[in-house]
Amino acid sequence: MTKRIYFYTFGCKVNQVEIDHLKKKALSAGYIISGDLNNADIVVINSCTVTDKADKKYHSFIRKIKKNYPDITIVTTGCLPAIDKNIEDSDIIVPNEQKENLFYYINTKDSGKHADNTLINEKNAVGSSSKTRAFIKIQDGCDSYCSYCIIPFARGNSRSRDLQSIKAEFEEKLRKGYKEIVLVGIHIGNYGKDTDVSFSDLVEELVNIPGDFRIRLSSIEVCEIDDKLIEIFEKYPNKICRHFHIPIQSATDKILSFMNRNYTVYEFTQTIKKIRSRLGDVNIGTDVIVGFPSETKEDFEHTVNNLYHMNFGYIHVFPYSERKGTKAAEMKDAVPVKIRKERAKFLRDVSEDLKFSYSKEYFGQKVRVLVESDGKGLTDSYLTVNLLNHAEKNTFVIAHIIGINIDGSLIGKVSYDQ
Image 1 (cartoon, helix red, strand yellow):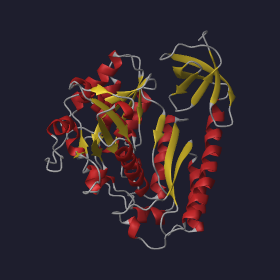
Image 2 (cartoon, helix red, strand yellow):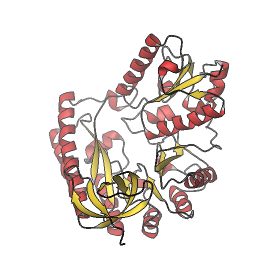
Image 3 (cartoon, one colour):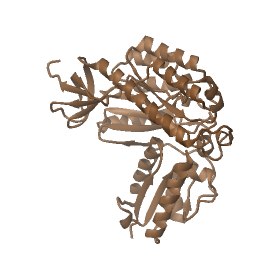
């Protein structure tokens, strides 16, 4: 009897890309994909272990499955098995490094605990897609070892995917009609450090592929934005999105040092200035962790002032969460959870203010928009546009911006007299 598999993923976009790839492999292996646990023989869980909260979500989910579906086979993969060697109630455990061989372990009922920790063979295309946007995973792992992060221990050192396999998948996505392709990974700027190409080399190869499309970069570290990458943005304005997401995590040197981040506020600011001096109104977003151990009221105020000074387009805010196994979890001078939440709320208000300030600069302009659904689209600078007149989905249109919503989204009318 053909078995039915239900897939569930926790965590980041990389995990989602990987689970979508596993779904394709399942179909190729003769399984049926089930959208309902009630109608599944096997559940495959792609776990996340970035915080203790993520671990708790996994354990809660798996206990619920065990209670309500006692006959189902539970398969766990993802980051958690690398950190927790004694995962309870999972029938099959497949390490991240052996995710590509997951169906071998399902078929043989091998736990996967004794699998060799070899690099995933990525000859086959890896990626996922939505209606207008496709994601391509270009690398895995991280070498940074920030003091608050468990990911290098969970995913190992940075490993780059073969450039030719990336290009082949990229061209496949274009043939299928996708107009925006997002390059994702655990640490995309590290791409090529284990090969003879750089991240900028990869981007240059991709933008030179013929077609009407645009490339969007996922999160990239400030020290990995070189002059060549900025030149590519300048040279191919319609092929690469005018949008950077550059995590700063804190805007005080003291906390950056405790976090083991390899830059100062001044160095970060200088790179931001260089980008803006050459690319103008490019949208730059960031990540900030508030309430890190020893962060004082003065440190937080200093961070807020610096964030305003750098004029980000938006901020993704995270109250610090202890993660067992990291250096930060052992640090003294913990900030009370209540204060962490208060600071996070304040900084989210700052983010809304910054986003509106950036968005209002588009008032009266004509911008190129990728239509994602009837009535909505996205600019290359990562702003949502509410379209007042009809435009065909998955097409590029020019929209005249005639209004700004309080949330920073734009109101536009498709201009057919371009």
